[in-house]
Length: 364
Figure 1 (cartoon, rainbow, N blue to C red):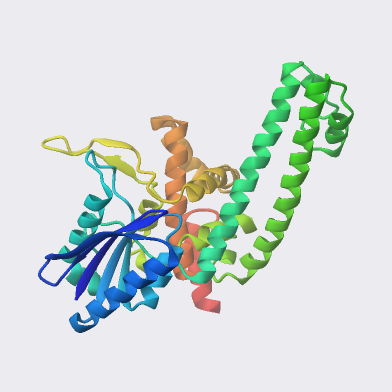
Figure 2: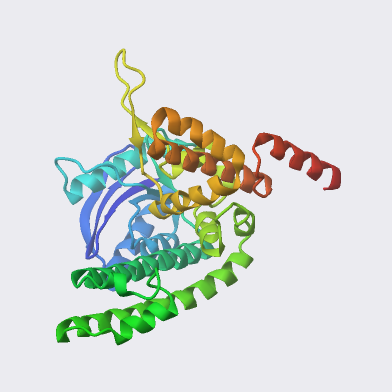
């Protein structure tokens, strides 16, 4: 068996190939031009066939798709996709590729057996449907941010001339306010800028409507998104974004594993006699998930009295910010139970959950 470490960049791949004894048999850079990269992987396949094939390890990035497909096409037995570590003080492409190759060779038996490797944050490649759902929800998030940025620029322009108090409505997103903005008398340059911002606003609204229509369609077809949608504040976009970023629930052994995967658990620095040095949350998972859970906290606290009382107890001891993060972490734990046991959200706490489970056993 051969073990291939790949440090991927836009124009080249830096590779490090080791044999079964851990010796480096090849280290070089390969251009990402189709002709050259195909010739390289054809040579790797010919070299690995007498050895029983090859494994590959790659750090996850935004343009892994074509490389993962090519590795499968040229007979890679398994591709290990991992989260990149913290930047080293002595970082080069060749050192990164060598480190990846050594990491793969040292843990080859556990990786082939499908066992977990301590200290290695492995990424499970998503299916085609999950990839499309993630891309669609990320696009919705990006368009929403662009729209908010445009509205804020319009607000800044009104503040510049102290005109915000003359708006006929309290908000800026009503038809009456939009009409007032189009007819507002300003200087030549300010008027031109406001017209361009209003045109951008219309553009973002049209694109958001198109994306949300597609999200509604795909959310109904997703196997777990309708269950997630039973949570307070989870519409089609939120439920699809959360569900497609969970993946197979079996890979999370415990309820707290999902919160840890999304970076909602506290970091720690325990050494020597000090064993309780907890810091802020790790933020190692999806930023979109943390943003959406933070928005859902407000809806959950309004509708669920059990969660509201629990939140108030933590707020009294630790403050509002830590209490909100604690609710986000508990929501991730609740999501694990909902998806694993295919049950909707139960408002009212554990007692209500037990009643629902009893009803499922009687009528299910």
